[in-house]
Image (cartoon, rainbow, N blue to C red):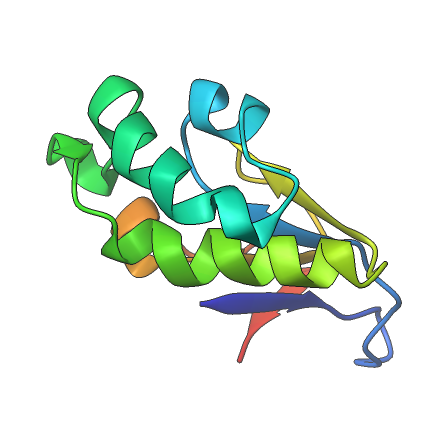
Length: 114
């Protein structure tokens, strides 16, 4: 899912880019290098899994993390301004796996879902 900011004139505004994974521990320990990713993710999903949306338990498989966190690492490594966050931001471009966002989630008016 990708959400983007639009102003009152319906023009897309420059926004911070966020990658959302709802686990503080996981976000605080993300590796700097993509080469360290697989060993790290296989260990941390057992130790600090993210909470699935709508109270469905914890995400102990790597699929929802892989594309989100790897994309974040690749972009950050190439000096693209982005942030990995454990709390859903109120604004900006938010990239998240659908398992981590409630089925009832609706963007606020300043977001338009694309």
